Length: 190
Image 1: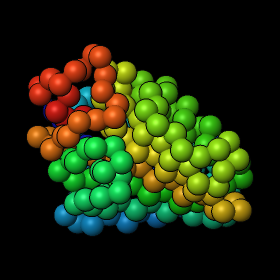
Image 2 (image 1 turned 30 degrees about the horizontal axis):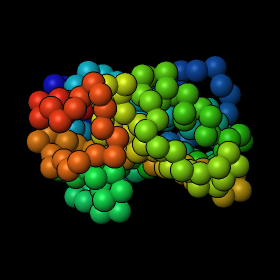
Image 3 (image 1 turned 90 degrees about the vertical axis):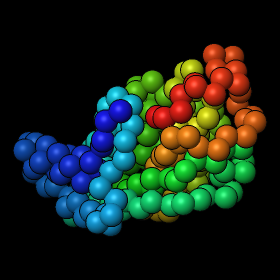
């Protein structure tokens, strides 16, 4: 288990952006409460995912507009928890809002697929303004990432909900996996 510091992730992406050859760069505004510096998880995939989503947002953003990143923590997400029959201890919510010059749905799906996540559930048509996806690792049975994409004109909002599941209350899942059938020790943490 390692600790991911979310403000460091954002700072590293901003430094990379400033050192890139791109002439006009959007500013990045970060809002993160002092009591949420990060969270613990296995490996570095979530850190890589956060960096790639932010880098993707910066690359797709109009240079004269800022990219806004807000990280919060939520105790419960009743609608999502009942839909997925899954109740983590808490949720880390990362919201990235920017003015896009292009669609962000395909790059978002590619980032997750490239990092080894598979889609458990996708809600929203190809040209829909609001889309929701639940992703997990190939052997996982519960969502490890909930992706919500919303678009209105050129404004894109990308919400990543990450369940913190150490010893979480899990009820019977609609997404039971043959690789992890009713095994209490299977994947208790991300």
